[in-house]
Length: 382
Image (tube, rainbow, N blue to C red; front, side, top):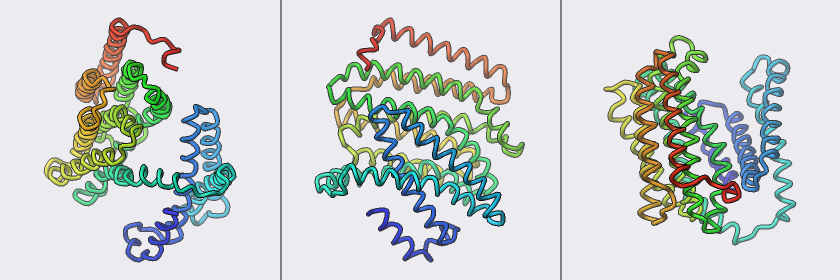
C-alpha cells in the first residue's frame, strides 16, 4: 500500500521530480517496480536467514543474479541494440519481478490473503520510526559524493566515488556476518543468555578486525587494477573509507540490541545525528580542504554513529551486554593500524609486511581472550 502511494505521488508530481531524476517517466516507473520486487526478495531473504536456511537464500540470490546478467546481455545484443540503457534495466527487472511474483503468491497463500490489524499495527509501530534511520543511512552513503560534485567538480566526485565504492567492498563480509550473527543473538537475548553473547562478540569482532586489516593491506592495489591512472589519487582515501565501514560494522553490535528491544525511535535518533554531522562537516571544510576531506568526514560520521548508539544502549536503555572496553580498544587499534598502513600506501612490500604483523597482533589478542575467559564450547554458542 505504501509503495503504491509513493508511486502515485511521484507520477502525479513528476514534472517537479523530473529534473532530480534526470530520467524519463517510464524508466522511473520500471525502477519503482524493480525496487518493490527487491523488497519482496529481501523479505524472503530475511526469513531464510532467521531460520538459518542459507542454502535456499543463496540459491534464490544466485539464480536471480545469473538470470539478470544473461538476460541483460541478450537484450542488449538483440532487441535493444540501439538502446542499451533500456536493455540493461529490463534485463535486471524481468527476472527480479518474476521471482518476486512467485514469492508474493507464496506469502499470500501462506497468510490466506488476510489483513490482521494486530500485525499491521505491529509493523506500523516498529517500522515507521525506522524510515528516518534508513534515510539517514542514505545520506551517510551519498552526501559526500553529491556535495563534492556540487561544491568542487564532477571529476573530483568521480574519483571519490570509485574510492568510496571500493572501500565499501568490506561491507560484503559485514552484511554476511551480521545476517548470521543477529538471528543467533536475538535467540540468545530471548533466552537471557547475555554472558554467552558478550563472550562470542569478542571473537566475532576479532574475526572482523582481521578481515579489515586484510582488505586495508590490498585496497590501493585493487583501486589501481580497477581504475585508470587518473583515479589513482584515490588511494589516499580508500583506506579511510574501509575504516569507516569497519566502524559501521562495530555499530551493529549495539544497534542489534536496540532492534531486539524494539527501540526504533532511538535507532533513528542516533543515525540522524550522524548524518547531520557528515553534512555539516562537508559544508564547512570540503572547499578549503579539498574533496579528499570527504573520506575524513565519513570516518567522523561513522565514528559518531558508533558512539551515539553505544550511549543509547548503555546509558539510555541501561543494557550492559557489549564489552565496551574491548570494543573501543579494538577500534583504537584498527584506527592506528589504518593510519600506519595509509602512510605506506605507495609502498607495497612494507605495507603487506606490516599487515602480517598486525594480523599476528590479533592472533595474540585472541589467545589472550581464550586464556582469560576460557574456550567457548560449541554447544554453548549454538
